[in-house]
Image 1 (cartoon, rainbow over the protein chains, first blue to last red):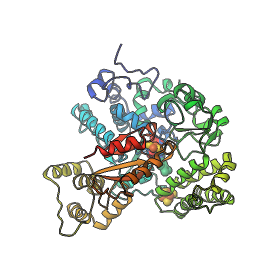
Image 2 (cartoon, chains in turn orange, brown):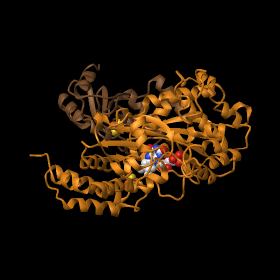
Image 3 (spheres, rainbow over the protein chains, first blue to last red):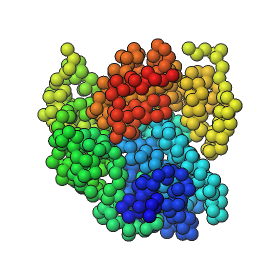
Image 4 (tube, rainbow over the protein chains, first blue to last red):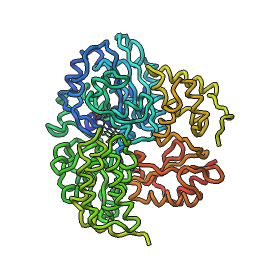
Length: 425
Length: 162
Ligand SMILES: Cc1cc2nc3c(=O)[nH]c(=O)nc-3n(C[C@H](O)[C@H](O)[C@H](O)COP(=O)(O)O)c2cc1C
Ligand code: SF4
Ligand code: FES
């Protein structure tokens, strides 16, 4: 059987082997939108319950249980409310949502329609980062196809349910991935985060209840509704059920996106799925969950299982599942310099500890370039980072502080050496 | 470059697109980002007279629109060249020479951040992770990704641009 979805090994990439599956007819021939149709005969509350039972955790980075978050949403079907898909994907190292969407936009749209029916949202937007222009066009085309079939719009499939869906392009600002910043941006403002509570589920876009979910979270919903929560839990662990997309880049032979059960070992990911280390070099460290996750040294990396709890037990986090592999030729001082330049550039400037703190952290490396940094600057980095944590409106300040402290912990000597050597004559 | 005498209005086709955009949102303000994208597509960048036009059209104060433009890296309040080239200098790309490529391109085109090259062909923009690290080092040429570049291949590619 050709051109049939492979639901056995994959939940998210189950259609990816099918040529032209971005086209709605090909998607449907392979089984697409069947689950959506079946879901319209189900009670919305039963759908929420199934997603909750599946244990699916939000794939945008924080890993909060999707079904639990859905449970905070108003059950008033008539109240005006919104469903936002977070396709901002700007955590450095992350490119899984792009990969998912550019090959198979319909799995996301199907997931959004089912979610909208469950949540009773009348309008939805896919907020996609500005750099993903072609991907936005693909999504728009797919949305048009879904409208033409009557899967979107007024009175969908005669069920008396309305759901309007549109793509909204960002314009180059990492912070817009944070959900309250994303909402500000959608409102036509600067993308600045807002203090929580109130949480968006209570008071979000235009002051109305708004559910924000990551692309990968929403795209997992059709599979869960087709095969059930129990089947989803065949993969992963009790606390980290299901499969996960990982974006792997850096010093491996085959960088790219893979879907594997949560709790797959990082060793297998590197050696089996990514064809091993580039040039046969030795592993030095791995950034396991995007640039904000503390680095793992080689020993920790070869021991870790990629699920939420095991990565946390090693002092880091699974985050967005962006794995950056670093071999023995890499200098951790340089990696930290690139990381901090990024956070300094992307701080939205509202909170003093973040605005000043990211500036000071980055400043140490600027001083190094002029030959004016000293060994004690590493202690200073540690101190600044510690003072930034838990003090701000959003988690960007923590996202800069955590990898700083992580590199200091695992590679202090190398960092001290790095800040005191300058390439400037 | 721009003066108050310069005129801007949406082409007929873009005016249609503008009207369609408004139908996607429950208020006018929410359409600001897509409208700015549309205006920039037509004009290349967003000078004051374009901002004034949008301000009148959408009934949003110019100061608010200017704030928004300056917040986002992909809205340009300075003139840019016919082609905008974004070079990634984040971790995975820097590991494979992204920064040297960016510096090399600046030198080759004898320019700096966003300033159009003398022939008006390219503006270069240093960017953070572009979300395509598997093809590091990478750049975006207008709306398309180009990956696994070297300085030489990047120059060759950009020299082909109109
Ligand atoms: C600084 C910052 C950046 C973020 N960037 C993203 C992002 O690019 N994509 C994303 O889905 N979530 C991102 N998040 C998480 C969102 O705030 C939000 O938790 C998420 O979209 C919720 O969806 P989920 O529950 O499906 O994960 C970011 C959070 C912070 C603090
Ligand atoms: S922590 Fe940083 S990015 Fe977040 S709101 Fe405060 S200043 Fe802005
Ligand atoms: S680091 Fe360059 S695209 Fe991600």
